Length: 223
Image (tube, rainbow, N blue to C red):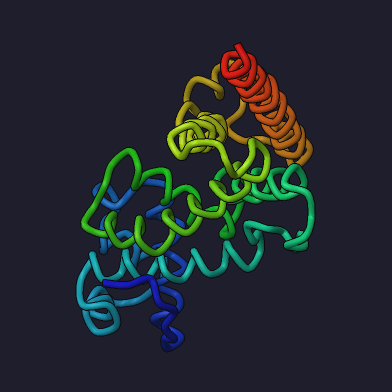
């Protein structure tokens, strides 16, 4: 199993589009091949022909919409490698939030991504290796630029986890948020505001916590 892009016939593409929407709405376990094919307007047998089975279709969906999502919202959003880590962090957070909170097909992979974390399928290990691990490594490198590359790895992992957790909250707690704000989605402006808040909050927390820690450590050594 691998998240590598493939090409399909017109019928295969229609199945893929319908499956992306239904898997994102209902998850792998609740979605049915029959419902996907009904929405795509094709015979059920074409799933076996193009994808082998439901698991093969699901993996193809993850592959296809991950690529579409990254093309629309790349993790660095075009930020230059030489840019300050603060700018890189905002780009990362903004891109991540639009992938999991945005509307339409470009958000389907983000929704599937969060579902995989909460309800892992056989595709989970593939997703970790080919999607989550590279993204995690990128964020770790950004965090290192903020707190200092001499900071111990465990501390950097704590910071990375805190940033990711803030972003995932808005998707994993959607049922609660829906009841609070009275609707099941965020506007583009609200996502931008959330991204700015998480970035500012995280930067300030990292600076306060770890600047103070380094100052204390330096004083202790001098004493």
